Length: 294
Image (cartoon, rainbow, N blue to C red):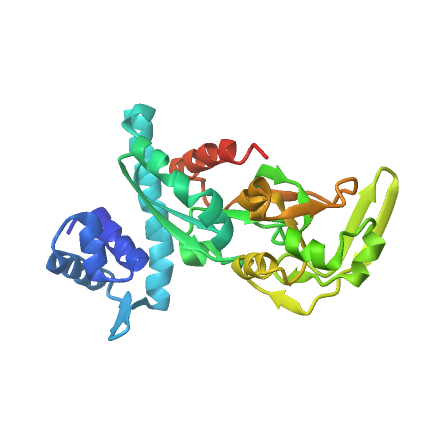
């Protein structure tokens, strides 16, 4: 048994969720994948996968082995990449994580050019508005927006975007445009529960004004925030990224331009306790310039 090859096969099975999907990734037959995993379990004398009608689930031992096997394969790939030189390109699977709407609007559509640069690379995108456990999910790099709450993570700031008070022209035609933050208590806000509380802090020079937003609609996903605001149900405070196309087209209008809100930061976050892979670094270097503009 080629132990490294068996480990790589097992990692593909866990990441893809099935023997057949792993076989397609590896361009081999499904029986070969099943045999490789069985030989690995026999070698280790431990069950790595639980098989059921719902699919494959790693056992506790299997999950621990997956995390270490993935790291070993990445380090082997790093050594090979260093020996061949950067001209050899990247290979294997890069597992990224990002908020759903942000990825849809600003990342997914640009992946083609990155993949063209690295023909032997595959990308596995885990899209979730929540901050998932990177090690447990096998993620190489995550894009996160806002304040980081876990000080144990390795993070690099790669972007910054203004936060704006926004709504549709139809909403403002019906309810009027606020001339001062103090007037926001007369407005309905659409609240995004994963992006902080209901307190909004505005500054104008040395002047500060804090308000508690009132809203009958609270959502826990950015897609819901967008839909509610675009349906004229209220105004909101969020990053310019969230409504970039609509701000450009005029479907969304920013108000109180003389007042500033704290900007929103974008971070590249890496799993703690292991070396950042060349794939993750290359992806971050590719993404950063895409978000440098307004």
